[in-house]
Length: 114
Length: 113
Image (cartoon, rainbow over all chains, first blue to last red):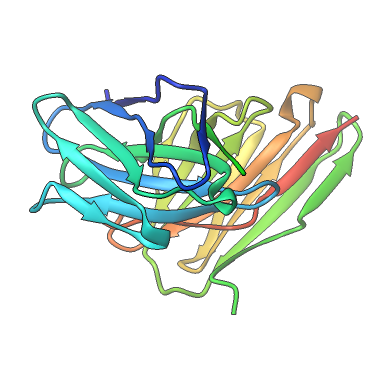
């Protein structure tokens, strides 16, 4: 079985400061990892993914994430937060080839304070 | 053009009714999904179809029945609606099914009264 943990229900950060949203995962086999963002009353939007290769992946809106195999983590980061980044962030995982099931974490609410 | 579109966006109905939610994707993807998001924002997969074939069927009441008339459409039919079915239902699609990202519709907010 595959699972994702987002240990923080909410993260608050001041505008202009760096932000981190944490994610750890558990899968058998190689993980395929994703971050999505959900704005109020909207669907989920894809931010970035790790499939293979460089452990640091860059995505939309200046976000990046670092894959750490030994710690089974895939934390989302941004060097300088914007108020408009305030939203609900979901980490998701699929196990290796042939797996169609995308399992989501429970989400982390990011609030960027002006 | 909307990549994944769901209709209706809002659905208010009485207990015991039967309702359908439609989903269409114009991305040419092979795999489509239905997710349920509860009041705590937790996302849980319900069904997945690959090339019109059911490949994921999670533990959901058999009152929920997906139907995929073709690769671009995945509809969700719900019989005998209950109060606990109130949630936001998201349709999504992806290419290949496992190493590419999923694209989500805007959601259908179902309220059962």
